Amino acid sequence: MDKNYMKEYIDFSNEFRKSNGSKESVEKMYDLLYELESIEKNKQESLVLSNVYILLGFHRSAFETFKEAADSKNTKDTSKLYFLEQKANSHENNFIIKDLRKLRGKKEKVQLVLNDFSQSKKDEKKFKIKNKNIVVFNKVLEKGKFSICLPNNHIEAYFDKIVEHINWLSNCKNELIDFYNKEQYDSQIRADLDWYDTLELYRVLIIINDDGTFTSVTAGDDFYRDHLLDIELSGNQITSMNYSG
Image (cartoon, rainbow, N blue to C red; front, top):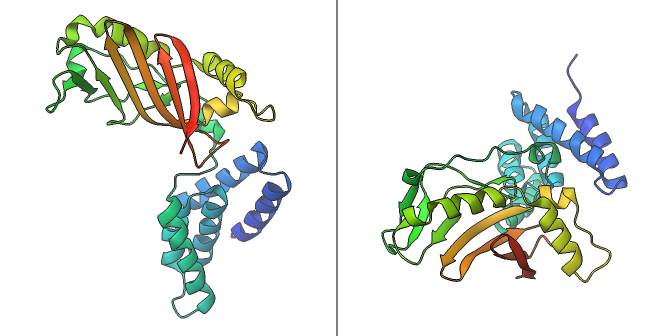
């Protein structure tokens, strides 16, 4: 007997809305998403998958999936396709509701060696990590989002300090949660483990000079999805955390 994915979507989406996006309802929606993504889909199943994408905030994926299944002669479909395209162009897949089960597992620290660092062609004092994705705040940071600025081009002199600081940055959840809750003025908003797990990192810059080690992190969180969260650190101490944008 074929599975009725539309019925599951209706049941799960109703639960999602009534519970204001509870963890359990989000997990059910993701389980449905993963199953639909893994099968050979007919038209109706593709439309269900598009609806799941919409609910979870994958607007680009929703548009691309609906486009393949939509009837170009159906006015309702063409209107919805236009709406989805506008949403995809403005939001992409940047504001999704996340599956905490995938985010919570502890990420392995990367073992770095001197040859992993690549000098910038434009600035001899600036370095990137060329072949490995480092872990910051228990997030695997994509290539190109991490850089280091030094007083000179002798990175070997700073290698141990860099590695030690990166290792500390890999998982400092208590420090981040405590600082956020002490500094934010809205008493109705409290950072917790879910907040930490769902942080998104866009850029990490470490600056080492004669005064010490300074780190700038550009991030995003689920409290204010249309703002950036700028985090500044001096050594292993968080010094500021502010929203911008």
